[in-house]
Structure formats: C-alpha cells, structure tokens
Length: 233
Image 1 (cartoon, helix red, strand yellow):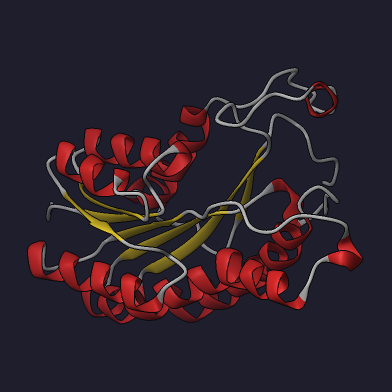
Image 2 (cartoon, rainbow, N blue to C red):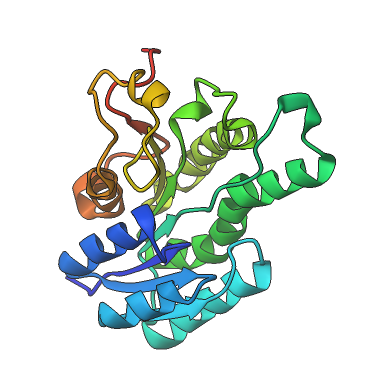
C-alpha cells in the first residue's frame, strides 16, 4: 500500500492531537497544524511534520498544504478541528462574533476542502473528517454559533460527498458530546445517559476510523459519539 499522509488542522491539543497520535500509530505520516506551536512539535515528535498557523487564515491553510505536498507529495486524509467560537445570549451576539463563528466552524472546513479536494481527486483517493458537535442537530443555547454553523457544515458535507464520491473522495462529520478535555459540569453530566464525559481517545478512535480505508463505503455522514446525549433518532 502507498504510504498514507494525513493532515490534522488545529491539532495541537485535545481531539486533534489524539487523532494525530492514533493515525501515526496506525502507520500514517502525519502533519499537524496549530496556532500555538504545539502542533508543529507534535508532528515532528510523530516523525511527520508540523506547521504553526491559524485555521482562520486562508494563507496559513494554503501554506500547510503546500508544505505537505513538498514533503510528502500527496494528501490522503484531513482532520478538521477547531477552537471554541463566540458564545453568549443569542440576540446579543454581535455581527462581528457571528462572522468569527462562521470562520471558526464552517469556512475553516470549506477553505481547507477547496485546497485538498483537487489533490485527492487526482489521486482518486481521499477522506476528510470534520470534528463537529452534538448540537448541530439539537441546538444547545450554550453553544449558539457552533450549533448554527455546524448545522450548515452537515449540509456542506452531504453536498461535497455527493459530488466527490465518484472520485473515491469522502467527507464525514464526527459529532462529539461533552469530552473530558473540558471541565466537568454537574448539570451537563446529568444529561448524559452514559453517566460520564467521553474520553478524548473515544472520539479520536472514530475520527481515525473515518479517515482510514476501514470506512471506505461511508460518506456524507454525521456520526454521533455522545454517550446517548442527543435524543433524536
């Protein structure tokens, strides 16, 4: 098999960092990008490569992709993570913060996809996995901008999947519930049928599965990994 190359965006910590470690352990060459510098260090520790930049900046995303092609010559998988966007009372969120939420939760994926889709199409192989949220389909007032724009991400992923499936290029979203990389709050814990927050590795295992050939017939899907938190069928 050709050596597989995966890029993890906003992968300096949390789910992204753990997914990078999982993919490297599975034999992938991994590139990691983050704004803090942690991603660059992690990529190098994993015998891959890294880049320091922001997923909110199109130029940084382009430079990361260019570095990957220069070093590895191909891009087989992409994991799009994000930081936490603006929160607050729904009608008090400013236009500026709504725009920031759009950049953080939706345009980050669209911009990265625009860069890597032609590469993957040429290879006739590729898998893009976006770390989304349980609130995409059951909006939570604690995460208004995330819920709004990641609902849009679900539509974008389906549209992309339908167009690119014939080229063996896939896109899926992972919808975590509350994860143990965040402080535990009793009111949130009480909502989870599983009775606990997810371990980061429980999310990254699903991410790595969707990036890999093991999920080769799955595309355009939104997979809840939430301990039963959401109620909809």
